[in-house]
Length: 360
Image (cartoon, rainbow, N blue to C red; front, side, top):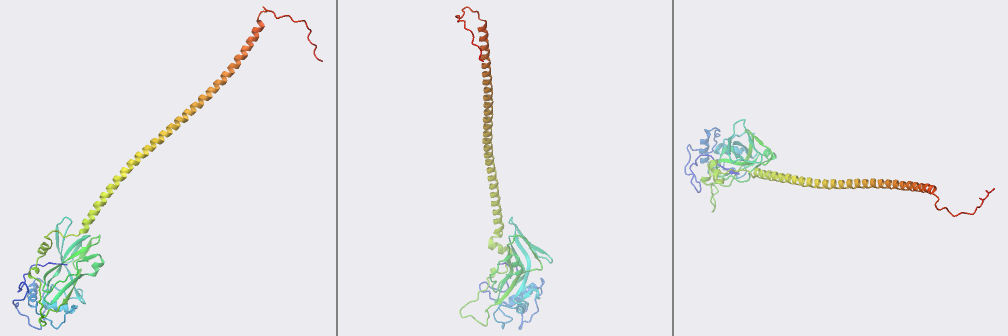
């Protein structure tokens, strides 16, 4: 929770114990059945006067310390001006809480620029995704010394994915404007209407009562320097007016950059793998081409050798036939020569023998 406060000076308060030093004029008399403070700008001064007077004067002292119900919230606001403006109707009051709506939105964009937008009737405001937006509620708070305040996000917004910085107690005697951080944890823009409630406020009456003096204890009020502080001054105190932003967008940005780098590295690795794969395919293709060329060459040489062998066999057959023919021719020639050769040396005479008679 962030409480910051807009510009009205403390009235009749001393630093330290914040004890009222004078009564405002005009005085208010018991039983303090006062009319409500007007909601317009003209009512702010009256709300200041009443808050100063009723700071330590409980208009309903017989009401015991407890969580205030709706009717007692309305009575205390009506008399003390502890919320201004205030709308005591059935749309705003629940059994033990009051619905507060937005008056101003403050946030920083991704470039660190501060953006302030006042809410107007029928207006809407967009909470960016994964962002922090500070909401200043419409009512200024002027708590007496015997009332404390807590607030919680309206359950409808919780169910839609918003988160509110809740839990801290707004102490008695606090005076100023209440700013609360809204976290839009969703991945989508969130639209809030001007007439839509933001938070539910609850009030608790404490045991602080002049009729019950402490034994040894001492009441410590909110320090004067912490009340009626302007929002810019509060941001300056809290963070030197530096941008207050969610870490989620930067984490998403870093994750996206890492993802882009990883994607780039993956693409480079794919290209490298493709290059080496291409080289490997080319090498394998070269080997296959070489093997095929060698196989073709072997087959071609084998075919050529087979053809040469067949041709050699054919030539050998031709040679054999030629040799046979030449031998036959030679024998025929020898026979002719032997028949035509002169009888220079007649063969020895043979006895005249009659040829044998043919067989019968």
